[in-house]
Length: 135
Image 1 (tube, rainbow, N blue to C red):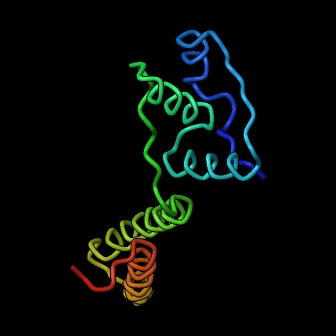
Image 2: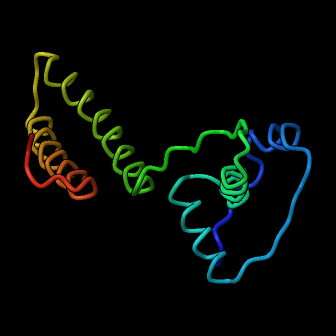
């Protein structure tokens, strides 16, 4: 299935007013797949890629919106950051309990579990980012 950008993006209206004329052409299936891959890697739509190629090839200077930054493994990183946020909230609760002057065995055990959780999350982040050793 071909990649297409999410519909309803805020800049869709800007594109139609900035570029009111539509031009269409056909390409081979293999070419369309290659264009989809390039567009996805650049974080732009197929139309934005085609427009930039055509305008550049014709030597026309146009005000084409810059490509959006694509973050590899963004869904995995988003999930890991969410987990770290939840751990941070729990860590604050544990610190509050321990600083109350009456630290409990439960708080100390929870702190040990949190430390192990952070170590695991850090290892997962390093794996996703391709970092092999601690900084």
